[in-house]
Length: 169
Image 1 (cartoon, rainbow, N blue to C red):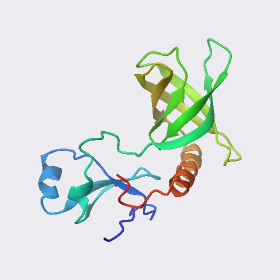
Image 2 (image 1 turned 60 degrees about the horizontal axis):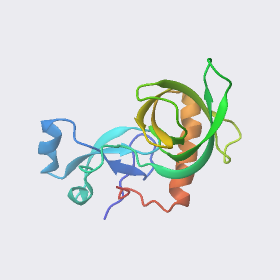
Image 3 (image 1 turned 120 degrees about the vertical axis):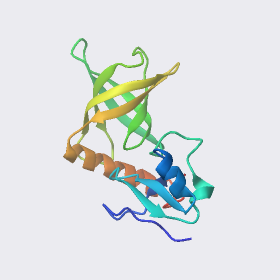
């Protein structure tokens, strides 16, 4: 099976994305599938004969969440900054061990991965899911240098966790 590469950054860590509309569903019949780069977030279409076997119908996420243990500090002007731990992460969001925030709350946070010298500042993230001991966050805004540092962390996790390029459904 041929390994696909992102046309934007060249990485082989791409994932079949959900179809957007009837045109993409029709193109699937001709082995043309949408893909999402797991590092630069580029979305593109490509011919891929194995795409029918790894479609994402069961998973709405376009980015694979990777197991992690990263210190995260919530910046909240109403209270002192407090630290928590990220248990999984992708270019699009993370799960944070914490409670006390409701769905729809906007947060600013700083990630402090051990593999990076500089911290990663997420200017805006939204609480999308609330569980008994954690919340799911979607990253909304970050600067390009922070996005680049986050992609290096994600790349390190993809490699260390043995994720296989293109078939990492």
